[in-house]
Image (cartoon, rainbow, N blue to C red; front, side, top):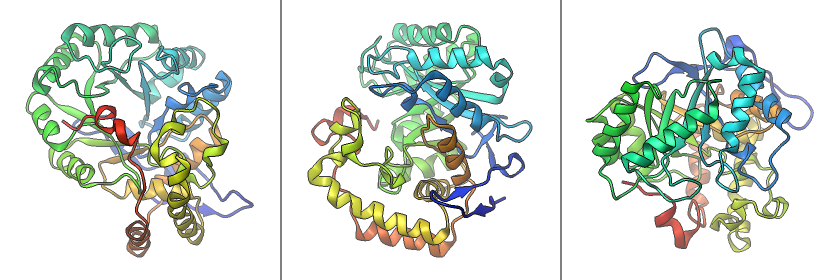
Length: 357
């Protein structure tokens, strides 16, 4: 059911009712989750993390919108901090200690599989066990690890071997489900032949939507796998409220090619055009982008990040908004007329930042 849109003073706002929140079944499981997930990275992987109580309020606000029997997909990482520590998981553990009844209302997905406190993939069986064990230990029994993802492909180990190791961990009871992250359609097929894959996490937004992305989405639909679409807001740019000059020193986005001054003016035209479409619909630019991602398929779960309760509610409402064929066509025209300058990360480092295969 579509949410009722209630216009108010700026910013445009949407009322959220638990009885109206869209839910979906996570691929190949009996888990019912909200159509819009909640990414937690920006709570801690920033120069100045938000106060813990603010982070708690942001998590709690989303979970409080759920209808009975549904869960909020929360996405964390073993290394979600400026120093690649386990700060994000430590915050989560303290949240569930304070709100123990919320543990059963959350579906927790955690990325790991890198060398300890490094941004280097390591899918050796020994490191995978170290990573999973460290995550479970950091949670301190406050919350079950529902889904584990290897954050990036380690080309030193065949996909089949890595998934086989993870399937062994499932049988041991270390976590419930296997997920994949930053992989191509071929890798999805290879993995699915070894074990049930519940979700594949890739970047999807109106300005991160290439043929490789479309291939993963269609392959996952064919195989009954959910797609968890991270950064549906273009790392904040598509909200229409973010300016690179307002980012805190040390923010990782300042190094990304799309945020460079020589590209920003060009890319801002896309933001302005999307903002105009959102205004006609009576929703925020963020909600427009989330609704566009949600329209990629019933199995696609937009996952915007949020460290603010009001933003969390705005994001969840976005996943409930239905765009008409005319509105989708208008957005397609905007994207066709305004190409993006710059890759998803840093152009010269792009082959090393994400591995499709």
